[in-house]
Length: 446
Image 1 (tube, rainbow, N blue to C red):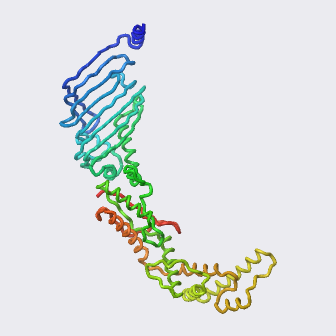
Image 2: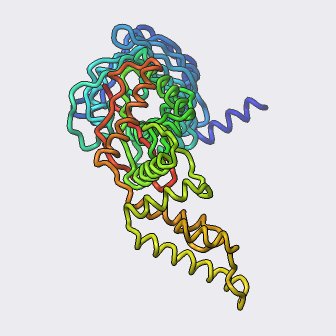
Image 3: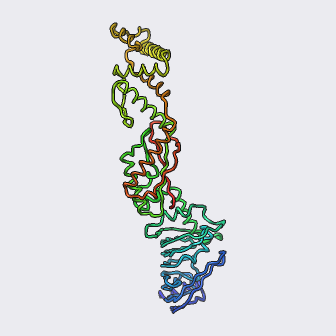
């Protein structure tokens, strides 16, 4: 009864089914040509051996395939899986493997989609595809050995990408590129093209890689590449901080595993953030020296104690020298007026607070404003002095050059050859006040 039911079912779907139990291929040859390309692509499979079982024109059936062959002289072709060759869009599950195939013969495809001929290289493919009711889901594992691009050819379909950089990022020191590439598509769509689907997927992968090369390279090598595209420096400083030293170590590892890559380090400075910080540092150094402190040229002066009488006197004297006695007197009047306004706001109708007689006389003798707390007054004086603080014309470019030199020196200590890390001429970058100045690194091909 079950057998009769199967026969009836088959008769309903295909009243005259064709069934072939087993087909054996021995030393067959397959000659494939893609006439849609200019130049045309052709490939030959020799010594094709294997078996196809269960061939049937019944759409509900599937044939079992097991084939092996030779591609060119030393390439392997292998097919395993199940499908109905009369209705491949309905229910297909196949695995196609190519190993050690010369990729130079595929130049027509690389010319069309990449805009380059292939000078040399071998390709291995592991393709696993499932098709259900015209919906294709595929997983492509692509391994390229010693891929070398040849002549650049104009093609309207070529990817508009820095392909040399993408290859250098992907290729390890053994000259191998190992790329996983999932694809999908609707085969019932009249516009469906398998080649276009695959090259679109490749284009998406390469676009992500070249648009964020440090992140892509970090992911490929198991390193945190998200933050390695820039080295941070404190404003006015060329000291490589410990977290940035770790970045340099990771960058050195990356370069060690990608022999074709070259790192570019900008000699960057911030016109705003660095200028303010350099002026502030120079001003604090000058005030400290006037108090008798010894401050070396490359030494950070540290904070100023605005409650220290010697610091106060140095600030007032410097203010008079640079901005004049009248400007200092105006600052005093503003500080005293602010004191009166603050007291009136805090306690309406109250009289201004009075200093003790001895302290009031002392402050007047010192030239200070008659206020309880003069901290804000001296901060205003320092702010005015900072704006007038002179800055050497080459101070910012020198700072940028010192920063790039610090990175290059750290890369050299990490074992990176000097020719693989280059610095660029000094350039200004945008950076907010009190935020690190970022040296945005670049990756290129040697």
